[in-house]
Image 1 (cartoon, rainbow, N blue to C red):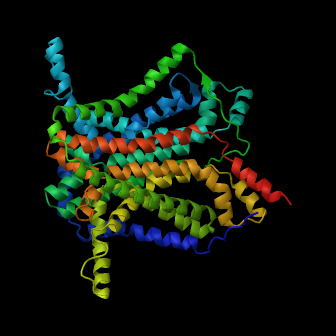
Image 2: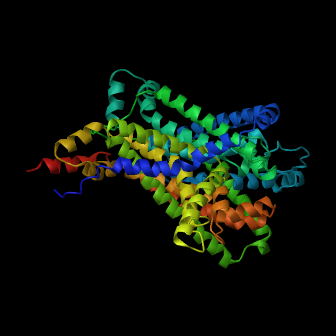
Image 3: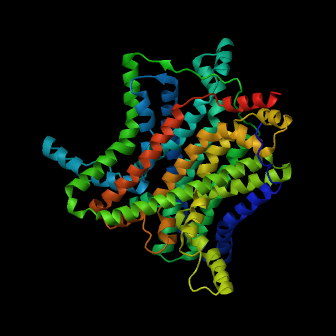
Length: 556
């Protein structure tokens, strides 16, 4: 048996050190808010906008959660449990809306459905239509658009959990007299709930942290209010207080969810047998396929068609190819580095929580839970929070080494720093849920046979975590490429990305010029989507490689 180096004893301490370093901006955010606390400003906010902001943010978050859970779980269940015409193609098409930034889909639908837009113009010309559509730039419109953009988070994680279910548990429940609905409620739902909750927390934090679409729609959410208060009104203290209130709300929701879950955990059976999908008849199969195509049409196909129409309407506004390829290259470099380093950090935390001593494991778990809240803070606030500690360190380094230019501020290092803090929750949520489904008896068996902790991780955990890790990496890649405020504020000089250019042009109502970079963001996101689909369609028994390694270890 090949041996691997033993894991270092201070691995947990190293993970804690990296986590503490990443948490510095969040601590700096809270400390600065307390230092600049203004009771009069807070009282004014409470009298004027705080109540409305809380209500609008709550309705937007609750509506988006309900919509994404309904659409995501339904789509995952249909794809995994039924065999129907076009199932393979639809399964990866359902992830396409994930590549669509919220601000891009907001601009696309606004231009498409407004009174002077092509849809109402065609209806007036063809049918003599004299009415008006409901304004998409509204709270209900935001809930609908957000639901059809964010549901892939829950779809992917739910589908991954459903693919790892063993038919043994299902058959046992059926033999005990459970109906199909009873099997779903009593067996399937508890097993997939951690993945649904992980996806729902991502949806919640993504919704609360959105700035581009909510600001464009004129909604008084916390994130839009922070952006407007800081940059439009110039009130730094009020913006920091709103950011702290938003962070506290997400912390409260997270603690309530953890308390409700208690000590429950789900593990993967070593006697895994795939749960074969049910073959549908022609009529039912076509109906299911048509229903599954609706989220793809609303969240991807229609806005892409609107962008293509804008591009075709004013081709002279298309940017030059040299500039376009420069923006695309910058986006790819930032996305690849950010996704890879964030995933490595998430796996390190999951590994440290599983193998550290009890006290250290609790510290690592608490640090990981704290890092998750970075996803709820708007990118602009994270960028400004990072700038202060980074400037202090940069000044100390340049003074000590007598350098003429800073090493950290407005470099790729600061940008990756922000990405790791902002999107740690995306990577860690899926990895943690998948790690919890690995039965501890596999670890105990391998350790009994003399394997080190690193060998257990490499030989047992890696085969079981591979699909979840790849999905997490691709999700972070797509999110990094869509990230706007942090990239805009921390990027190096002349380091424009597709997201930055698309937002700047769209904000100036130059939608035809913004169409090409917006379409490029979507096009680049399609490749990870296809890879995610292929990973999800492969169904090897989750414990097969681990079981083979254990059998080899038992051989003389």
